[in-house]
Amino acid sequence: MKPSPAYFDPETLSKIASLDLRARTLVEGLTAGLHRSPLRGHSIEFAQHREYVAGDDLRQVDWKVYARSDKHYLKQYEDETNLACYVLVDQSASMLYQGEQSFLNKLQYAQLIACSISYLVISQQDSVGLVTFSAGIDEWLPPLSSPSQFDDMIRIFEHGNHRPLTQLARTLEAVLKRIRKPSLLFLISDLLCDVDGLLTTLRLARYARHDVMVMQVLDSDELLFPFDQLGRFEGMEEPGHLVTDPVMIGGAYRKAAEEYCKQIELGCRQLEFDYFLTRTDTPLTTCLSQALAARRR
Image (cartoon, rainbow, N blue to C red; front, side):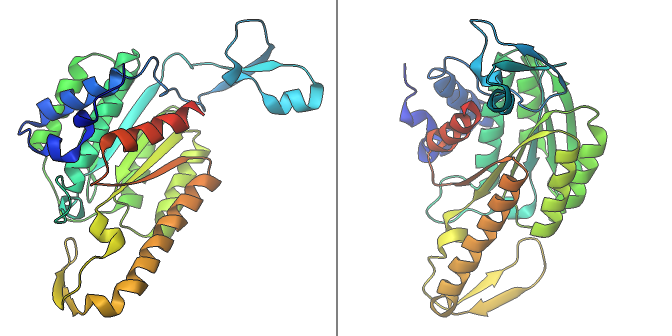
């Protein structure tokens, strides 16, 4: 059974007032089309190799060993059946931006992604935790596999406090210090921050053997810059404004935005982390399908 596209349409979801109902509508439509969850960690504590036997999962074959020995060996992990997943959601002021073509702001879109991922992790009987952040860690919900965890996440999203600034690199470093064993980290943010600082901190996650998925959520305005009249642009996190002619700077802006996203993507790829860029006018089915397909690969 394939999920109905209506479950994932931002316009449809925006007409549902309750975040709880939005989230459940979304995840029920999503899970209806899944036969197994791809949200398994691929970088938990490595223990040893063992010879392949008929019926083993081919995804665990160490192909580098096969290339050297012409024999099939499987990688075994100490804790591969007890995945701990942390969903990290940026709730700073820039995440509240919503262009005229979008039915949800970036934070609402990010929350729905977080709910979907969390629901899938819990449904496979693994544990999931939630970290919301802005200038620092705002809320920390330790990982649990109980269905009640999903309800607690919804309450945090609905009643969360928002601070204006983002200090992503420093906050992510603080998160890493609190996680004691390799885990799956799902970072959802617009990533409007210093790229070098972000990649330096992600490198720490690699050293700690975490498996990281990075989801960059942007409004189409931030990528396409569709404005065509002289206007005043206000900062959402920093004070000040800029009066400019969008037609004159549009080409340079779009090029800079593309290069910015490419720099983050390249940095993630070099660290062997998954990276996904999505816009808030994109149906959730597209966004989540791409992420889950990449995990299966």
